[in-house]
Image: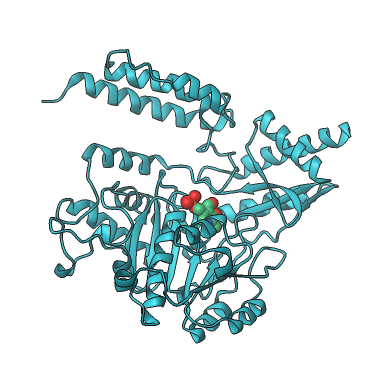
Length: 464
Ligand SMILES: Cc1ncc(COP(=O)(O)O)c(C=O)c1O
């Protein structure tokens, strides 16, 4: 029997959701409430009785709204974040309604099949080796962690050491060779895997933060024993790509495992316009990429892709007598990520690939890169404003006058609230970071945002 009250609550949420998204374009970007204020407001009084569903949801909306950032709004350029497309959101709602646990293919065949089909489509879209194994993780952080776990186990296995039997203590030392500007989450993943600073060889990067091929070759020539090499497609500030063809050649000659962190940059492979940036990416052993960035799936969704299916499964499998074993020859979702019970992320991925199609994904990524160039051209035409990176992808790193002035411009842009940008410290300078990854951003949004940034810059300059 359909519960009429519950249907009404769900219908009301749908109306609320559609209205909220319709108002996105003119939404204030930064939250109006601070974290401590929200902690206070969210405090639960346990002496209260349980509440009716519509009261709970109404209360949640009223409490949360002041502390929400307008991440889905078209002029939100802070960090590299997708817009949680509503088709993906609807698929995500269904994922919760269905309550599937994507732990194994026997219990939830649709959840497992959606992953398998989407995984195959991802390999095709990004032209990665067919037959690679795809795990559905929470984010690129965990996707890289997963790939690097497989790498760690496999390079040791090749050196005659079995982690499963003997653990890590006393194993042949592994050297990790990576760019000095690898993303912070790669260093975190390495820490979780038991690698310390002294196990890492950091290779010099160029002015865009990309590995210098010669420096990589020299570093690799100096190391011996099991090696994991890590490269990057899409630097967090500049969007730059490492020179994969040269890196892969050296890594292969050394017998190293090559992992590529392509949290957002890997999507360039799905375009005609920017595919060339990722030449050689297919030569790696593993790749991490997010769905919740450029594919616009809702959070959380990312993919851990490993060429050697057996190495992937060996590193991740959770054997138990009550779970399907490895013997049936079928892909089991929990063999590919370090989780058993988990969200069926294949549904929202499947929905977004179907919603956009290969052509739609390519068009969107190319358009975002063109919009990033539009930002760079307009901003750098103004005296005192410097774009520090070659804008090859979707990221723009901007410096206004001095470090102090740059920070003041960012603060003013945030408080004026026409658009949202964040800041960072990069290569010794304060920068405003502009990331174009929201599917709804238009040229008019860029122009309006540039106007706001330049007006903030003129006000800051005038005040000094
Ligand atoms: C290059 C790169 N790697 C990894 C990550 C981490 O991704 P996630 O936040 O999805 O875990 C990011 C996030 O921006 C990134 O830009």
